[in-house]
Amino acid sequence: MKDFLTFDYFITPLILLIVYYIGAIVIPILLWKSRHYLLEKYALLRSLNDFIKSFFTSLSNKNQWYVRITYIVLFLMMELMWRMMFEAMIGYFNMHNYLQHISSQLTA
Image 1 (cartoon, rainbow, N blue to C red):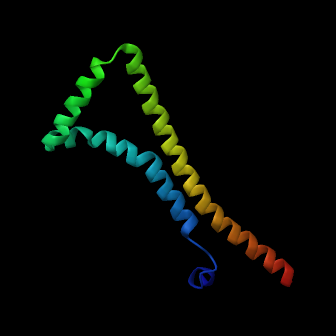
Image 2 (tube, rainbow, N blue to C red; image 1 turned 180 degrees about the vertical axis):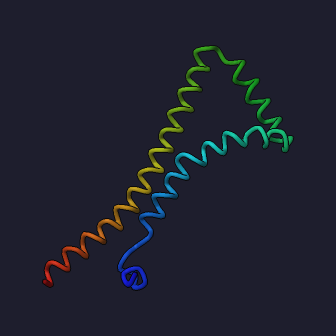
């Protein structure tokens, strides 16, 4: 408890891990699920969705597959960037812990 109160122990890595999983899993699912509600509530989004659907159906099958694959690749790249951002932050806190450990061994 003393380490927590004197900021020798960081709670941030645990919080970062929780926020990472919320952002990587929960938010995309909630956005996908809330899509229907947003389309019903906002006419501008509904008309934009209708335009995108008509544009997509006007494409050839080959181009429709290109659009789908591009969407999947972009989604995976965003997930990868989200992961890398959190790895850098968690790595910083791990580095702090290792430096404290090395420092304590040098003084002992």
